[in-house]
Amino acid sequence: MSAYELLLVLARREASLVDEGRWAEVVALWDQRDALQAALPETPPAEAAPALQEALAIVASTEARLQAELADVASELRRLGEGRRAAIAYSRSSISPPS
Image (tube, rainbow, N blue to C red):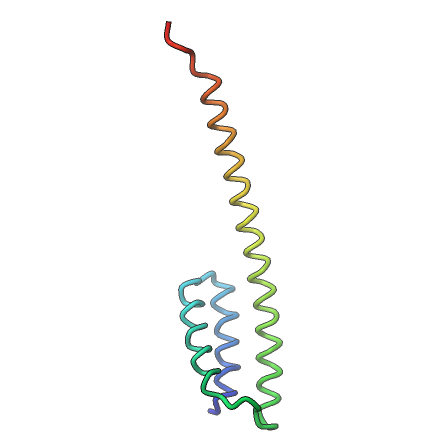
């Protein structure tokens, strides 16, 4: 298997891990992919084009899913923050001063 085919395998694996929400493994895979990419020549050979094009399409789709997931998490964090502030405000207004 060529290094370019391995990039395609890693892109497929990343997509699968993202689908499964296995975030720690996604990060570990990024380290593996970065190391592989660093070892590749600046200009790939022509025969690598099909694997690279497919890998690029998969990575673009995965990135879009990650961005959507991040937006969902940000929304949830905002919602939790608003609920926390409301609970604090409510608790402060419901406490009677000592007589």
